[in-house]
Length: 326
Image 1 (cartoon, rainbow, N blue to C red):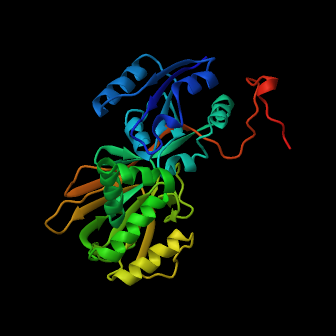
Image 2: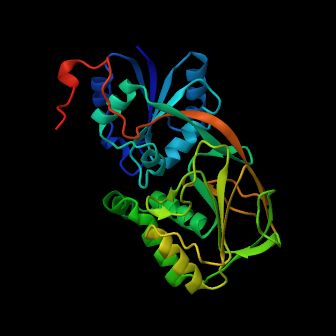
Image 3: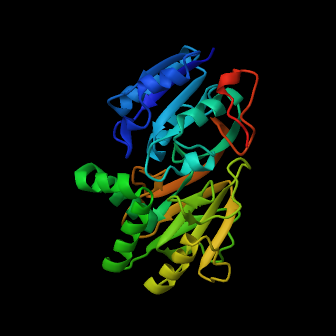
């Protein structure tokens, strides 16, 4: 029997409609299950801190990438495993871990005890697990977050079209907003840039291949090798930038684009060279503005439940729970 704390986020795009407390207790009736819905970030942090002290073995996070981000801040280098119950918009992290919102499949993955340790990316003391960056992608993430909070109609639309929300907001910005770039100073021992002073519409920091569900920005990037991918866009006009990003949306890597710089590293510093601080997003969440961003790796800092095609049969299953194999 395992001690499990489940955190439900009623503000995610699918809310508590996907994972109800009675259904969770039905599938995990053999375990000591406690379901919680914190009303604030402070309450969430204190509750998970209490979980750590009392020896909770698993934390389940029901929500999107933002919920995962908030919960995981408290689990880095702790002896607690994280299970994602995807109920957000893009669910990038859940997709990377091979998880769906099928509760029966989730319970099978849990019973099979398939976990892995992944790297956590440290950005000025705050962690992210998937992708982040500055510039256009950050503007898109901030707009989606703001509209979701302000407009009930927008929130209903997100439930209907899911991850396509990000593509629509991106298209709207590219077609209607002025094209602009940030002046940034880049420091990294692995950077191939000759001049570290650049003008860029977007810099992405990637711990996995995809962002926004479909945008393949960092092919072959791993989340457990002690490094992260840095992708720098140096396009100085709208059409070149749009052509590059559209190729990525189609799953194609623009390898011959001279304005695209990509490298792997374990340490990166970004410093604003204009009169504005840098706004960084990670896991879809907006981090505090900073003049300088120091980015590093907490190697294998988080243990998560995952499924990558393993047979989900183990001795803990009774015969009536085993699905017929066609």
